[in-house]
Length: 440
Image (cartoon, rainbow, N blue to C red; front, side, top):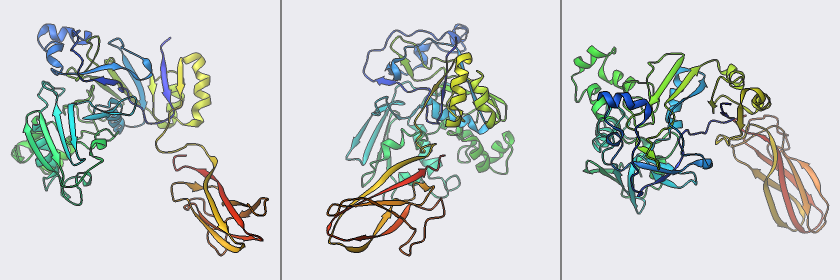
Protein backbone atom coordinates (compact mmCIF):
# COMPACT_ATOMS: atom_id res chain seq x y z
CA UNK A 1 0.00 0.00 0.00
CA UNK A 2 1.24 3.48 -0.86
CA UNK A 3 2.35 5.37 2.24
CA UNK A 4 0.93 8.82 2.88
CA UNK A 5 2.03 11.20 5.58
CA UNK A 6 -0.08 13.94 7.14
CA UNK A 7 0.99 16.45 9.79
CA UNK A 8 -1.27 18.72 11.81
CA UNK A 9 0.99 21.76 11.53
CA UNK A 10 2.78 23.96 9.03
CA UNK A 11 6.44 23.49 9.85
CA UNK A 12 7.72 20.72 7.58
CA UNK A 13 10.52 20.32 5.05
CA UNK A 14 10.72 17.86 2.18
CA UNK A 15 14.50 18.06 2.32
CA UNK A 16 16.12 18.04 5.74
CA UNK A 17 19.16 15.76 5.81
CA UNK A 18 22.58 15.93 7.42
CA UNK A 19 25.48 17.00 5.23
CA UNK A 20 29.04 15.90 4.66
CA UNK A 21 31.37 18.59 3.39
CA UNK A 22 34.71 16.86 2.88
CA UNK A 23 33.79 13.32 1.81
CA UNK A 24 35.23 12.03 -1.49
CA UNK A 25 32.87 12.35 -4.45
CA UNK A 26 31.12 9.03 -5.22
CA UNK A 27 30.69 7.74 -8.76
CA UNK A 28 27.70 9.61 -10.17
CA UNK A 29 24.58 7.83 -11.44
CA UNK A 30 22.47 9.46 -14.15
CA UNK A 31 18.96 10.44 -13.11
CA UNK A 32 16.56 8.18 -15.04
CA UNK A 33 14.11 10.93 -15.95
CA UNK A 34 16.93 12.90 -17.62
CA UNK A 35 18.51 9.97 -19.46
CA UNK A 36 16.89 10.73 -22.84
CA UNK A 37 17.72 14.44 -22.65
CA UNK A 38 21.34 13.59 -21.85
CA UNK A 39 21.45 11.12 -24.73
CA UNK A 40 20.08 13.70 -27.18
CA UNK A 41 22.46 16.41 -25.95
CA UNK A 42 19.67 18.59 -24.51
CA UNK A 43 21.25 18.24 -21.05
CA UNK A 44 24.86 17.62 -19.98
CA UNK A 45 25.53 14.43 -18.00
CA UNK A 46 24.95 14.50 -14.26
CA UNK A 47 28.63 14.90 -13.32
CA UNK A 48 28.66 18.11 -15.38
CA UNK A 49 25.41 19.38 -13.90
CA UNK A 50 26.21 19.15 -10.20
CA UNK A 51 28.85 21.42 -8.62
CA UNK A 52 32.45 20.22 -8.58
CA UNK A 53 32.06 20.02 -4.80
CA UNK A 54 28.40 19.09 -4.27
CA UNK A 55 26.75 18.77 -0.88
CA UNK A 56 26.81 15.06 -0.03
CA UNK A 57 23.94 13.81 2.12
CA UNK A 58 25.21 11.26 4.63
CA UNK A 59 22.20 10.62 6.82
CA UNK A 60 18.53 11.43 6.88
CA UNK A 61 16.18 12.49 9.64
CA UNK A 62 14.34 9.47 10.97
CA UNK A 63 17.02 7.09 9.62
CA UNK A 64 15.33 6.97 6.19
CA UNK A 65 17.41 6.86 3.03
CA UNK A 66 19.23 6.63 0.86
CA UNK A 67 16.17 6.48 -1.35
CA UNK A 68 15.16 5.56 -4.88
CA UNK A 69 14.85 8.09 -7.70
CA UNK A 70 11.48 8.75 -9.30
CA UNK A 71 7.80 9.22 -8.59
CA UNK A 72 5.74 12.20 -7.55
CA UNK A 73 4.15 13.65 -4.43
CA UNK A 74 0.64 15.11 -4.39
CA UNK A 75 -0.39 17.85 -1.98
CA UNK A 76 -3.58 19.89 -1.55
CA UNK A 77 -3.45 23.68 -1.23
CA UNK A 78 -6.08 26.37 -0.77
CA UNK A 79 -5.03 28.97 -3.35
CA UNK A 80 -2.54 29.77 -6.10
CA UNK A 81 -0.34 31.78 -3.75
CA UNK A 82 0.60 28.56 -1.97
CA UNK A 83 3.31 28.02 -4.58
CA UNK A 84 5.43 29.94 -2.07
CA UNK A 85 5.23 26.93 0.25
CA UNK A 86 7.71 25.15 -2.00
CA UNK A 87 10.33 27.68 -0.93
CA UNK A 88 9.76 26.47 2.65
CA UNK A 89 9.55 22.76 1.89
CA UNK A 90 12.60 22.76 -0.40
CA UNK A 91 14.82 24.06 2.42
CA UNK A 92 17.60 25.13 0.03
CA UNK A 93 19.44 27.90 1.90
CA UNK A 94 22.92 29.38 1.99
CA UNK A 95 23.07 27.89 5.48
CA UNK A 96 20.67 25.36 7.01
CA UNK A 97 19.96 23.61 10.27
CA UNK A 98 20.73 19.90 10.20
CA UNK A 99 18.62 17.29 11.98
CA UNK A 100 20.40 18.14 15.24
CA UNK A 101 19.72 21.87 14.85
CA UNK A 102 23.34 22.65 14.07
CA UNK A 103 24.05 25.26 11.41
CA UNK A 104 25.68 23.83 8.28
CA UNK A 105 26.61 25.32 4.88
CA UNK A 106 24.25 24.15 2.16
CA UNK A 107 24.26 26.29 -0.98
CA UNK A 108 27.53 27.63 0.38
CA UNK A 109 30.54 25.34 0.36
CA UNK A 110 31.77 26.92 3.59
CA UNK A 111 31.70 30.11 5.62
CA UNK A 112 33.77 31.84 8.31
CA UNK A 113 32.68 34.17 11.08
CA UNK A 114 35.01 36.59 12.85
CA UNK A 115 33.92 38.32 16.06
CA UNK A 116 30.25 38.10 14.96
CA UNK A 117 30.83 41.08 12.69
CA UNK A 118 32.74 39.72 9.69
CA UNK A 119 31.23 36.95 7.57
CA UNK A 120 32.98 35.36 4.60
CA UNK A 121 30.97 33.11 2.28
CA UNK A 122 32.48 30.63 -0.17
CA UNK A 123 30.33 29.35 -3.06
CA UNK A 124 30.60 25.88 -4.56
CA UNK A 125 32.69 25.73 -7.74
CA UNK A 126 30.59 24.85 -10.76
CA UNK A 127 27.25 25.51 -9.04
CA UNK A 128 24.51 26.45 -11.54
CA UNK A 129 21.04 27.90 -11.54
CA UNK A 130 18.17 25.68 -12.72
CA UNK A 131 18.63 27.00 -16.28
CA UNK A 132 22.31 25.96 -16.32
CA UNK A 133 23.79 29.46 -15.87
CA UNK A 134 26.63 29.86 -13.30
CA UNK A 135 25.78 30.86 -9.74
CA UNK A 136 28.51 33.31 -8.69
CA UNK A 137 29.12 36.33 -6.47
CA UNK A 138 27.81 38.48 -9.33
CA UNK A 139 24.37 37.36 -8.15
CA UNK A 140 25.17 38.76 -4.70
CA UNK A 141 26.67 41.99 -6.07
CA UNK A 142 23.62 42.50 -8.27
CA UNK A 143 21.24 42.09 -5.35
CA UNK A 144 23.19 44.45 -3.10
CA UNK A 145 23.89 47.23 -5.59
CA UNK A 146 20.94 47.01 -7.98
CA UNK A 147 18.09 45.93 -5.71
CA UNK A 148 18.79 46.62 -2.04
CA UNK A 149 20.42 50.00 -2.79
CA UNK A 150 18.31 50.96 -5.80
CA UNK A 151 16.11 53.92 -4.85
CA UNK A 152 13.30 52.88 -7.19
CA UNK A 153 13.12 49.22 -6.18
CA UNK A 154 13.98 49.76 -2.50
CA UNK A 155 12.99 53.31 -1.48
CA UNK A 156 13.67 52.53 2.17
CA UNK A 157 17.13 51.18 1.49
CA UNK A 158 18.47 47.75 2.53
CA UNK A 159 16.46 45.46 4.77
CA UNK A 160 16.54 46.57 8.41
CA UNK A 161 18.12 43.20 9.32
CA UNK A 162 21.18 44.25 7.35
CA UNK A 163 21.58 47.41 9.41
CA UNK A 164 23.53 47.54 12.66
CA UNK A 165 23.04 50.77 14.59
CA UNK A 166 21.63 52.23 11.39
CA UNK A 167 24.69 51.37 9.33
CA UNK A 168 24.72 48.91 6.39
CA UNK A 169 27.43 46.29 5.95
CA UNK A 170 30.56 46.68 3.91
CA UNK A 171 30.16 44.21 1.03
CA UNK A 172 33.34 42.98 -0.63
CA UNK A 173 33.46 40.77 -3.70
CA UNK A 174 36.73 38.88 -3.23
CA UNK A 175 36.40 36.73 -6.35
CA UNK A 176 33.64 34.95 -8.27
CA UNK A 177 33.18 32.45 -5.44
CA UNK A 178 33.96 34.52 -2.32
CA UNK A 179 32.04 37.41 -0.77
CA UNK A 180 32.43 39.12 2.60
CA UNK A 181 29.96 41.10 4.72
CA UNK A 182 31.29 43.12 7.62
CA UNK A 183 29.97 45.60 10.18
CA UNK A 184 31.70 47.85 12.68
CA UNK A 185 29.72 46.16 15.47
CA UNK A 186 28.51 42.56 15.90
CA UNK A 187 25.54 41.25 13.96
CA UNK A 188 24.93 37.99 15.86
CA UNK A 189 21.75 37.02 14.00
CA UNK A 190 23.13 37.29 10.48
CA UNK A 191 23.97 33.60 10.05
CA UNK A 192 20.68 32.44 11.57
CA UNK A 193 18.78 34.74 9.20
CA UNK A 194 19.95 32.57 6.31
CA UNK A 195 18.53 29.36 7.79
CA UNK A 196 14.98 30.51 8.46
CA UNK A 197 11.85 29.28 6.73
CA UNK A 198 11.67 32.74 5.16
CA UNK A 199 15.37 33.55 4.82
CA UNK A 200 16.96 36.95 4.41
CA UNK A 201 17.81 36.57 0.71
CA UNK A 202 21.17 38.06 -0.30
CA UNK A 203 21.24 37.12 -3.98
CA UNK A 204 19.20 36.96 -7.18
CA UNK A 205 19.66 35.37 -10.63
CA UNK A 206 21.37 38.41 -12.11
CA UNK A 207 21.58 37.03 -15.65
CA UNK A 208 17.77 36.76 -15.79
CA UNK A 209 16.70 39.87 -13.87
CA UNK A 210 19.07 42.23 -15.68
CA UNK A 211 16.78 41.82 -18.69
CA UNK A 212 14.03 43.46 -16.61
CA UNK A 213 16.13 46.12 -14.88
CA UNK A 214 16.19 49.69 -16.16
CA UNK A 215 19.89 50.00 -15.46
CA UNK A 216 20.74 47.19 -17.88
CA UNK A 217 17.85 47.16 -20.38
CA UNK A 218 16.06 50.16 -21.95
CA UNK A 219 12.58 50.59 -20.51
CA UNK A 220 10.97 50.57 -23.94
CA UNK A 221 12.40 47.11 -24.59
CA UNK A 222 11.04 45.83 -21.29
CA UNK A 223 7.58 47.29 -22.03
CA UNK A 224 7.51 45.45 -25.36
CA UNK A 225 7.80 42.12 -23.59
CA UNK A 226 5.63 42.71 -20.51
CA UNK A 227 2.48 44.67 -19.70
CA UNK A 228 3.03 47.52 -17.28
CA UNK A 229 3.37 51.26 -16.90
CA UNK A 230 7.10 51.25 -16.15
CA UNK A 231 10.01 48.84 -15.67
CA UNK A 232 9.82 49.03 -11.86
CA UNK A 233 6.27 47.63 -11.71
CA UNK A 234 7.16 44.87 -14.17
CA UNK A 235 10.32 44.02 -12.28
CA UNK A 236 8.52 43.67 -8.95
CA UNK A 237 5.97 41.29 -10.47
CA UNK A 238 8.66 39.05 -11.93
CA UNK A 239 11.17 39.06 -9.06
CA UNK A 240 9.32 36.61 -6.82
CA UNK A 241 12.09 34.51 -5.32
CA UNK A 242 10.14 33.70 -2.16
CA UNK A 243 6.69 33.64 -3.78
CA UNK A 244 7.91 31.06 -6.32
CA UNK A 245 5.25 32.02 -8.89
CA UNK A 246 7.34 32.95 -11.97
CA UNK A 247 8.05 29.94 -14.23
CA UNK A 248 10.78 31.88 -16.06
CA UNK A 249 12.80 32.81 -12.98
CA UNK A 250 15.74 30.42 -12.36
CA UNK A 251 16.03 28.86 -8.93
CA UNK A 252 18.43 26.90 -6.73
CA UNK A 253 15.58 24.88 -5.20
CA UNK A 254 15.27 21.13 -5.83
CA UNK A 255 12.07 21.60 -7.86
CA UNK A 256 11.19 24.20 -10.49
CA UNK A 257 7.70 25.56 -11.11
CA UNK A 258 6.47 24.61 -14.60
CA UNK A 259 2.83 25.82 -14.39
CA UNK A 260 1.94 29.44 -15.15
CA UNK A 261 -0.39 30.87 -12.46
CA UNK A 262 -3.30 31.07 -12.01
CA UNK A 263 -4.17 27.39 -12.25
CA UNK A 264 -5.89 24.60 -10.34
CA UNK A 265 -2.93 22.26 -10.53
CA UNK A 266 0.72 23.29 -10.16
CA UNK A 267 3.57 21.02 -11.18
CA UNK A 268 7.09 21.45 -9.78
CA UNK A 269 9.62 19.44 -11.77
CA UNK A 270 13.05 18.23 -10.70
CA UNK A 271 15.90 20.77 -10.99
CA UNK A 272 18.57 19.11 -13.19
CA UNK A 273 21.31 21.29 -11.62
CA UNK A 274 20.49 20.80 -7.95
CA UNK A 275 23.58 20.83 -5.73
CA UNK A 276 22.91 17.88 -3.38
CA UNK A 277 23.76 14.21 -3.96
CA UNK A 278 23.70 11.13 -1.74
CA UNK A 279 26.52 8.73 -0.96
CA UNK A 280 25.42 6.41 -3.76
CA UNK A 281 26.06 9.14 -6.33
CA UNK A 282 22.38 9.89 -6.95
CA UNK A 283 21.50 13.51 -7.57
CA UNK A 284 18.77 14.72 -5.25
CA UNK A 285 15.90 15.20 -4.85
CA UNK A 286 14.63 11.64 -5.05
CA UNK A 287 11.14 12.73 -6.12
CA UNK A 288 10.72 13.79 -9.76
CA UNK A 289 7.63 16.00 -9.40
CA UNK A 290 5.68 17.73 -6.65
CA UNK A 291 2.07 18.47 -7.58
CA UNK A 292 -0.11 20.99 -5.76
CA UNK A 293 -3.86 20.82 -6.41
CA UNK A 294 -5.99 23.80 -5.40
CA UNK A 295 -9.20 22.96 -3.52
CA UNK A 296 -11.37 24.73 -0.96
CA UNK A 297 -9.57 24.89 2.38
CA UNK A 298 -12.49 23.35 4.29
CA UNK A 299 -12.43 20.29 2.00
CA UNK A 300 -8.74 19.52 2.41
CA UNK A 301 -9.02 17.37 5.57
CA UNK A 302 -11.76 15.23 3.99
CA UNK A 303 -9.93 14.84 0.67
CA UNK A 304 -6.66 14.07 2.42
CA UNK A 305 -8.34 11.46 4.59
CA UNK A 306 -9.78 9.81 1.48
CA UNK A 307 -6.32 9.44 0.00
CA UNK A 308 -6.14 12.35 -2.44
CA UNK A 309 -2.85 13.60 -0.93
CA UNK A 310 0.45 11.79 -0.41
CA UNK A 311 1.82 14.45 1.91
CA UNK A 312 -0.31 17.05 3.66
CA UNK A 313 1.54 19.37 6.04
CA UNK A 314 -0.92 22.28 5.76
CA UNK A 315 -4.63 22.99 6.34
CA UNK A 316 -5.05 20.29 8.97
CA UNK A 317 -6.07 20.92 12.56
CA UNK A 318 -6.32 18.98 15.78
CA UNK A 319 -10.08 18.71 15.20
CA UNK A 320 -9.30 16.59 12.11
CA UNK A 321 -7.12 14.12 13.99
CA UNK A 322 -9.82 11.57 14.87
CA UNK A 323 -11.19 11.50 11.34
CA UNK A 324 -7.74 11.11 9.78
CA UNK A 325 -6.81 8.31 12.15
CA UNK A 326 -10.05 6.53 11.34
CA UNK A 327 -9.43 6.99 7.60
CA UNK A 328 -6.00 5.43 7.95
CA UNK A 329 -7.59 1.98 8.10
CA UNK A 330 -8.68 2.19 4.46
CA UNK A 331 -6.64 4.97 2.82
CA UNK A 332 -3.14 4.14 4.02
CA UNK A 333 -2.84 7.50 5.77
CA UNK A 334 -0.21 7.85 8.49
CA UNK A 335 -0.87 10.82 10.76
CA UNK A 336 1.94 12.62 12.58
CA UNK A 337 1.48 15.21 15.30
CA UNK A 338 3.91 17.97 14.45
CA UNK A 339 5.00 20.78 16.74
CA UNK A 340 3.84 24.18 15.61
CA UNK A 341 6.01 27.23 16.18
CA UNK A 342 2.97 29.51 16.37
CA UNK A 343 1.60 28.08 19.60
CA UNK A 344 -0.83 25.51 20.92
CA UNK A 345 -4.06 24.66 19.14
CA UNK A 346 -5.77 23.49 22.32
CA UNK A 347 -6.47 25.04 25.72
CA UNK A 348 -4.50 24.11 28.79
CA UNK A 349 -4.05 25.04 32.44
CA UNK A 350 -0.67 25.74 33.98
CA UNK A 351 1.11 27.64 36.70
CA UNK A 352 2.77 30.53 34.96
CA UNK A 353 4.24 32.51 37.82
CA UNK A 354 5.37 31.78 41.38
CA UNK A 355 6.08 34.47 43.95
CA UNK A 356 7.94 33.88 47.19
CA UNK A 357 7.80 37.01 49.34
CA UNK A 358 8.96 37.27 52.99
CA UNK A 359 6.43 39.40 54.85
CA UNK A 360 5.82 40.60 58.41
CA UNK A 361 2.06 40.31 58.20
CA UNK A 362 -0.50 42.92 57.34
CA UNK A 363 -2.31 43.81 54.15
CA UNK A 364 -0.51 44.25 50.82
CA UNK A 365 -1.07 43.87 47.09
CA UNK A 366 0.54 41.33 44.79
CA UNK A 367 0.80 42.42 41.14
CA UNK A 368 1.13 39.79 38.41
CA UNK A 369 2.07 40.44 34.78
CA UNK A 370 2.21 37.51 32.37
CA UNK A 371 2.72 39.62 29.25
CA UNK A 372 0.55 39.59 26.13
CA UNK A 373 1.56 36.22 24.66
CA UNK A 374 -1.54 34.48 25.95
CA UNK A 375 -5.22 35.33 26.00
CA UNK A 376 -7.25 34.42 29.04
CA UNK A 377 -10.51 32.47 29.08
CA UNK A 378 -11.33 33.15 32.75
CA UNK A 379 -10.18 35.63 35.34
CA UNK A 380 -7.09 34.70 37.30
CA UNK A 381 -7.08 33.10 40.70
CA UNK A 382 -4.23 33.26 43.18
CA UNK A 383 -3.53 30.61 45.78
CA UNK A 384 -1.75 31.92 48.87
CA UNK A 385 0.09 29.90 51.50
CA UNK A 386 1.81 31.34 54.53
CA UNK A 387 4.75 29.41 55.90
CA UNK A 388 4.08 30.85 59.30
CA UNK A 389 0.40 30.02 59.44
CA UNK A 390 -0.07 27.12 57.01
CA UNK A 391 -3.23 26.45 55.12
CA UNK A 392 -4.27 27.56 51.66
CA UNK A 393 -6.75 30.14 50.49
CA UNK A 394 -7.92 31.13 47.03
CA UNK A 395 -8.56 34.73 46.13
CA UNK A 396 -10.04 36.17 42.99
CA UNK A 397 -7.70 38.19 40.83
CA UNK A 398 -8.88 41.40 39.22
CA UNK A 399 -7.76 43.67 36.41
CA UNK A 400 -6.66 46.37 38.81
CA UNK A 401 -6.35 47.08 42.54
CA UNK A 402 -9.90 48.44 42.68
CA UNK A 403 -11.17 44.86 42.59
CA UNK A 404 -12.97 44.56 39.21
CA UNK A 405 -12.91 41.00 37.91
CA UNK A 406 -11.48 40.26 34.51
CA UNK A 407 -14.17 40.21 31.83
CA UNK A 408 -12.45 40.62 28.44
CA UNK A 409 -10.86 37.43 27.15
CA UNK A 410 -8.19 38.98 24.97
CA UNK A 411 -6.43 41.36 27.31
CA UNK A 412 -2.87 40.68 28.46
CA UNK A 413 -2.81 38.43 31.49
CA UNK A 414 -2.25 40.97 34.20
CA UNK A 415 -3.85 40.98 37.64
CA UNK A 416 -3.78 42.19 41.21
CA UNK A 417 -4.88 40.57 44.46
CA UNK A 418 -5.18 42.05 47.92
CA UNK A 419 -3.71 39.65 50.49
CA UNK A 420 -4.10 39.82 54.28
CA UNK A 421 -1.94 37.75 56.63
CA UNK A 422 -2.44 37.40 60.37
CA UNK A 423 1.18 36.48 61.17
CA UNK A 424 4.70 36.73 59.72
CA UNK A 425 6.00 34.15 57.28
CA UNK A 426 6.71 33.59 53.63
CA UNK A 427 3.90 34.12 51.18
CA UNK A 428 3.96 31.78 48.20
CA UNK A 429 1.57 32.98 45.52
CA UNK A 430 0.92 30.99 42.36
CA UNK A 431 -1.35 32.01 39.52
CA UNK A 432 -3.12 29.23 37.65
CA UNK A 433 -4.83 30.52 34.53
CA UNK A 434 -6.81 28.85 31.78
CA UNK A 435 -5.18 29.85 28.52
CA UNK A 436 -5.63 29.48 24.81
CA UNK A 437 -2.99 30.53 22.32
CA UNK A 438 -3.68 32.92 19.40
CA UNK A 439 -3.26 29.90 17.10
CA UNK A 440 -6.35 28.15 18.38
